[in-house]
Length: 393
Image (cartoon, rainbow, N blue to C red; front, top):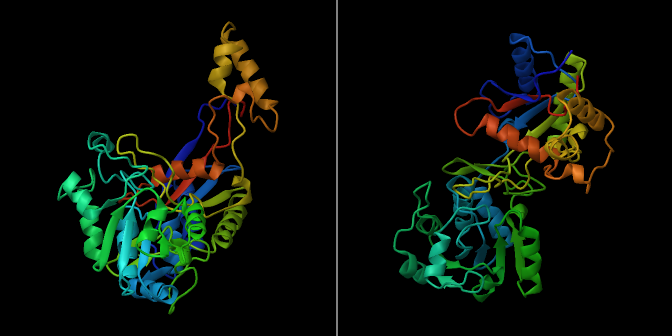
């Protein structure tokens, strides 16, 4: 039978999950109720994706600001330089509160005109107008206020992040530079707070004479006084849970996705793939925010989701080889090409314009946009037909 529908994405509602719940059962039961209520036939290579926050919550993977403070005190004796934290109430403000509770004086080095994920401190056009070179100029807070004003608010949140961070940190100084080595003017002990550039910055600081260098991935990478933890990412990927606690990125994801896969495969007698997803790694063209404050899009997935797409670009072929053929000839040739394509198409003209990203990153964007971050109540996403193509019957 001719297939007229390709990829279908459905948000799946679940009960409200709390710490200690059996999430494998909850996800599988929610999926089974959903497909049976809509008479959906599960198929091989269907994907079930679960948001990371649901996994972490069920694990009870939380930590208090006092537990963060204890780990910071264990690692630092004197003043600490915080290099390139992102501008976020949800992501960093509560982490900063924990660091500040260590009692250490803080020097906060902010990148400008924006942070690593695109939150802006100021309009970058102002740098040109004010003749400021962001590649070389180091600004102190007094310079920042004199040049840009006493109240500089984020376009979307309406928050003056410099004032907010200073209020939270208390005993701190704020500096502005895009050279991480600038922090060494104030202290040799550094906590690298960036997400995706952390390894390079750590090495650069060590090579430049820093004495103690850790990253947020080194804080709470093991339990402190009974806290949650993440052995791979520490505080990276954490979110504000309350005024005094954070929810950490989930751990032991491989065991979870494997258990969900087995239960759904047993139910459906089909090969179901499972993944955990966080931020979707897409960029807002208006706000310029890159939606990837998590260290990775997918902290765990089943083996069938590894790799990158191996696809032909239909519109390229249609505009070149097929432009003078009939409708029937075009369809026959395209289906033949897809059915007999090489296993590795990297570098060929027929792939021109296809998206060179990992499958889990692409699916993560799809799922993140589907589930949203508000009140949809669909923290599980069910994707069918993602691996279908024009030749699939």
